[in-house]
Image (cartoon, rainbow, N blue to C red):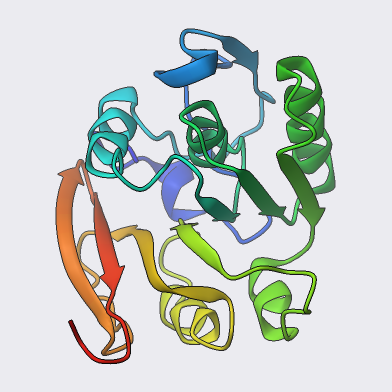
Length: 212
């Protein structure tokens, strides 16, 4: 997320990662790795996620993050998935298309000593979701979905997530450009919403089959 619209933002492509800190460092906010600083690649066209937004999101998620199985799509620096691990998530799977960024994320997991709980897949997120999950892939209880803006990726990703990737009562955080009214599955109930600059983050709760 950014506070102001910038030219680089509108040019961000599916191969460009998001960045969590403009200084070239990612600061984890809470949990086991609180205040740890990790390097991020200096690459153009990145969209930062402010610390305050991450802090707000994980305050919302505090009851469900411990023990969660998290999926971080369009992972970039992996700020959200790493924060989830730091706050007690059982495991996190990071999907990142850019090979250099994916490797940097692997290195940061090694730096934290978190390779047993974090795994990186170098793949296009939509193509990853289009492949059916295997028996070895448990349903995810927590999903972070932050696709490149203005490329019509949010809706198909939401649709594919419903094809076996989600636990019955999963939580899904979707970040989009503020002018977009995302179309999400009917089983997703809006739980919380936050706006920062020209982006809006929405946290959904997936309702169980009986709608309770």
